[in-house]
Image 1 (cartoon, helix red, strand yellow):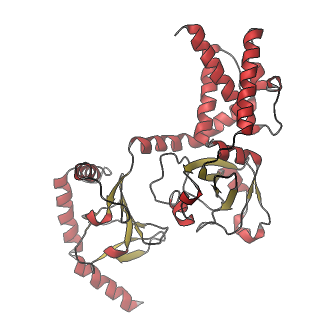
Image 2 (cartoon, rainbow, N blue to C red; image 1 turned 60 degrees about the vertical axis):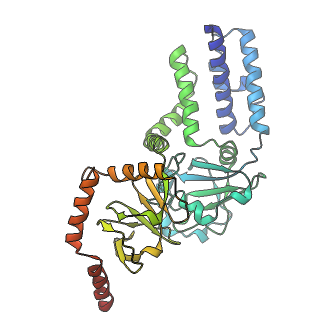
Image 3 (cartoon, rainbow, N blue to C red; image 1 turned 180 degrees about the horizontal axis):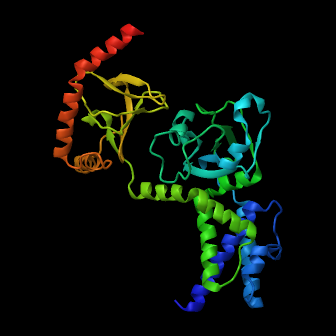
Length: 376
């Protein structure tokens, strides 16, 4: 491929990226690319014929975006920015105080979007929240913090109908919230903060290669903001993508390890496991961990719905993998832990015996619960 062809391809991609940014962030339609300061900066030093060709490319991309109707059903999360959160006085207001609320793109970042084949495939509200609640393993394309109060979940039915609702710390509000046009555009184009960062990075790379200054102060500030606030989230998402969660049936669990998180049926809050416990075949055996308030919680095996264990999720509702994959995942799960944890099977066996000596056996756990019950 000649250098001239490479240059033309690079210019075409540059113009598409510029048109995308202008479409998202300019309220007025830029039917004339010469109204775009980014386009003008990019064309500096380019001959007139090439400029005219690229102007047509800009118009085509902009028109495609403007007429695009992404008909896929989807779920998206908008995260309230730290600055906006600090400006709100949530403690003195309740969600009932909001009447026909309008959310602004200045206050929210699109951190997650997932498409589905049709509206019937969209998860329930409970399952939607499992994608972003505290102490769950986030999807690889999740680029924000755990869902917090005033974050927004957006559900599209595949027919351009958008239903946006606040997360109130427990669930989704019954009333809807209106999101502004920029937020709607991002949802319809699946333009989450990571994709936007890549567009800005490509333009910055072009600037370095050519010595041109294309981005305006507005977009440079935007690029710096994303880098400062989301670089760790992008790295975490990359690691999750490179080490995807594997699934095994919860019935195959042999131990609860320190650092595991257990979810009981119907509960959105996990129970943190701090002591190693051997899984007994007896359905009456009790296990224990700490809830979100730090209180000790007892439960039996039948109550367990999901266990997050390192990079493996044990799910009662998910079928078993084939044995060859299972054995690989078990070894990976058992061998990977924090620096204080054993790194071999023998190490785990020794740790299990030590844990047994410390806690004696499950009968002592039952006795402990009985004593607690009597004192309540």
